[in-house]
Length: 64
Image 1 (cartoon, rainbow, N blue to C red):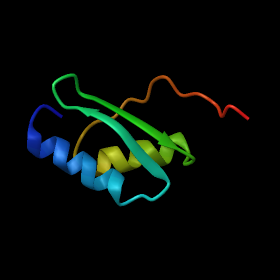
Image 2: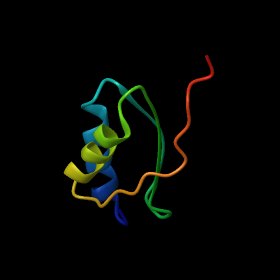
Image 3: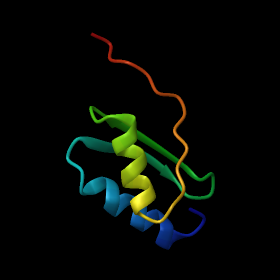
Image 4: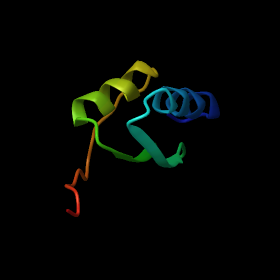
């Protein structure tokens, strides 16, 4: 994800999933920050379906 077209594809892929909230998208750093109730595998699938390779880092639990 190094160009605006790639960033737009990632945004569109995540916007299509109501359970995923896009918080931050930084194409230059190749970084995406989301908040979601979906499984990590689902988020990775959405990102990779946009045409980008995805590696998930920093997963956390709920504050409940």
